[in-house]
Image (tube, rainbow, N blue to C red; front, top):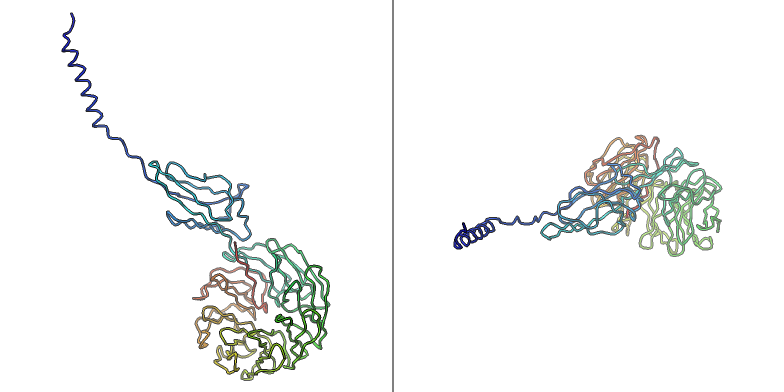
Length: 452
């Protein structure tokens, strides 16, 4: 029996209404807007990972990711590895990239919105110093980890290393001047002098200048390692020679301060100032400043050699401390004495601090603070304007090893303690220390090379 037509139409209409009601109740789920980079690290292109202590990752959400790595890391071949939240990311995790410049990583959410992170990868600086047991070190300046160590002839405690074209030059008491590769310590250059070299060379215009205990001052070509000229004196020359206006300046154990033409090696002038052991002349505003055993600090016209003024240090010898000139003040340490500040123009004594401390090293000035080590075993920070003590760290026993502040960290070697230290210069708190195995006395200060 056939069903009435109206029954079929009613059924169709009912079905259509059902479908319509279903569509009204089926709300679509909104697409997610979640997008973020979570964990982030980098590995070397060969797949090897950095030690946990060697890599530091700082993430600023939705902004930057800063990665710091050990000195001399090749930033052109690194592989980022990370997890993320969202639909996609570019560049991808696990892809080797050149990260020597900032790279933007874009995370896209399911709803199409995006967030960008700028990834910045840097290498930390390195710090270099020698000890008095034939060893020379390169350390990670941020962590204190050893990068390399060389065992070479002679002691290195009298020399501040110098960097030229990725080569670290350092003098030894064996009479050898070494040029070492900054990244690996390989011997790239060397020169044998006629006696022990107990001073810091100066490099200028392709020539390395230094004094020697054979009583000669040397000028050696940096390319060929051949002698350009020598200048004889009446005593050992253990002071670092500054170069200024075509002349090189140095003091000799014969009691004279010399100015010599840097090209020809001929004397321009000489001035009797009394015995100088290892104190080096310092140049500032056309004047040469140097201390001597005569308990005097001298200011000498760099062009003529005429004495401008001399100032007494209350009977203490100034023959071992290199002066530092800063903001119109000369700072210098005294043997069996104190730390002094003199007016650079007049020679008037402005203050005396650290009474009876016996300061051998060169004062370092940073943020209106003078940093020195003293023979009472301490590292001292004093106010540069008043000489008032800011802080003191005992037990370092630096024996003349000089401080250096670089990239916000104070570095100094310990003699009797046999540690090399990194300090917070504001508080005097130790950031890290590295055991050297032997003393680092009389090295004045280390060399710092900043990272990329």
